[in-house]
Image (cartoon, rainbow, N blue to C red):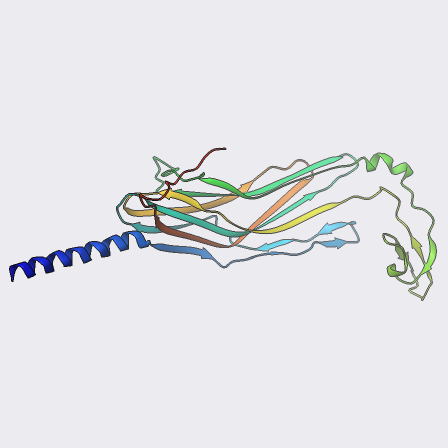
Length: 264
C-alpha cells in the first residue's frame, strides 16, 4: 500500500509540475486602444483667393499615450512581444510668394514603447530593437522661379469655340460668360506660370518591440508625438487613430536560437 501511495504522490507531483510548465510556456495576453478614427478629405479651392482652404485631416484621438500591465511567470527566456498598431495621417502644405521662392514642410509621427519606467529610470528596461521608431514622416520641399518671369507670363489668345471645359484641350478652360452652346472660347494657360503642391496621406503601421523580462507585473506605456520642422510658408498637420496596443508573453526555450538584434 505504501508503494502505491508513493507512486500516486509522485504522479500528482509530475502532473502539477507539468501544468506549471505548460502555464509558463503558454503565455499571457493583454490589449488596449481606441476606435477614434482619422479621416482624410480633399481641400476646397477658393475662387476668391485662388488657393486651397479647409481642413483635410479630421477625427482621430486626442490622447498621446496608452498604458497596460501584464503578469509574467518566472523562468529563463520569458519575453514580451509588444505591437502598437495605428492609422496615421500627415498633411503638408508649401506656398510661394513674390518674396519667398522656396518652402519646406516636414512632419512625422514617432512611436515609443517603455516598460517598467520609473522617474529614476525613465527609459525603463531595454527594448529591442529600439525604444522609439518613426511610423510616418514626410519632407515636402518646393522652389520656383515663376515670379521672376511674370513679365513674360502671358497666356496665348483664346481660340476655338466651346461650351464647357470638356470641349477644350487638356489643361485649357472654356471662357463662356453667357453659357450658350458654342458661345465660349478655349483659353490655354501660360506655360510655366502656375504652381501649387498639397499632399495628404493616411497610412497604417505596426511594429514588434521585444522585451526580455523577469517574473512579476510589468507596466507597458505607449506614447507618440510629432517630429519635423517647417520653414517660412510651410505648414503641417497630423492625425492618429484608430490605435491598438497588444502585449503578449512568449517563451524563448533553451533549444531555440537566442533573441538577438544587430545594429547594421
